[in-house]
Image 1 (cartoon, rainbow, N blue to C red):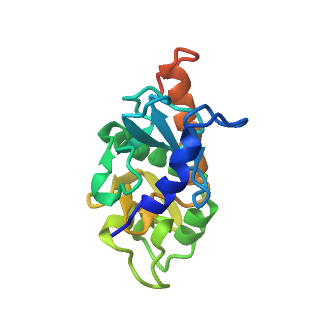
Image 2 (spheres, rainbow, N blue to C red):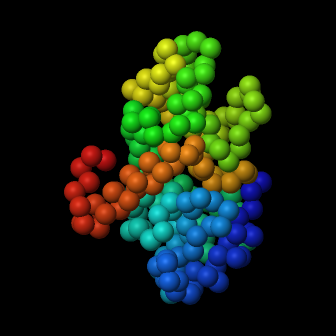
Image 3 (spheres, helix red, strand yellow):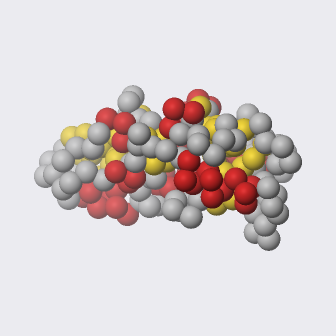
Amino acid sequence: MLSLAPRLRAALPRLARASSTLAPGSTRDPEHPHLHYHAQPPAAPARITLSLLPTPSAPHSRCVLGYLPPLADAGLGDFVENPRFRELLHRAIKDGLAKGVSESVEFEAGTRPGDGYMHITDERAIPPAGRIGETEDIVGSVFVEGGKIVASTYEPGPGYRLVTGHGVMTLPRGLDEHVVGVLREIDAAERGEVDGEQW
């Protein structure tokens, strides 16, 4: 079972201090390319939000992966997923597949021996070559025809979990950056800074 305790023990003291690059009450996870913890509210946190953005979003934003209690021994069983994030995540992945943003996913599609469905696996737990990942790590599946991804066929993995014993979701490179870009757009729209009708 994943214990987020070591990460939270390290993060909680930093959440209380201001940072030159992050909002007060926020800290970046040093072991994840995009993960940030945000205390809400910063002065006396009632919960910690997990986000791929460096600045805190509104408490019930679609940009928040989920929530943890502000306890140093919080673990996997304490994580509460934000269902609005999951819906947005899969829409952004489908859009990224249509735009061909992930070289590794495109390469895998191009090297398949024939047409058929291909799984997109979370990179927090990459299976051995030739093996299929655990159900909780299969982000989704997409049909490949003639070595090309047919993005309109993308289907979310029904057993996919944002947080598992192997860590917090880590999408294939390119898809991860695309999703972060979409989250920035949504966050700006939720703040009233731009129009976010696409999402």
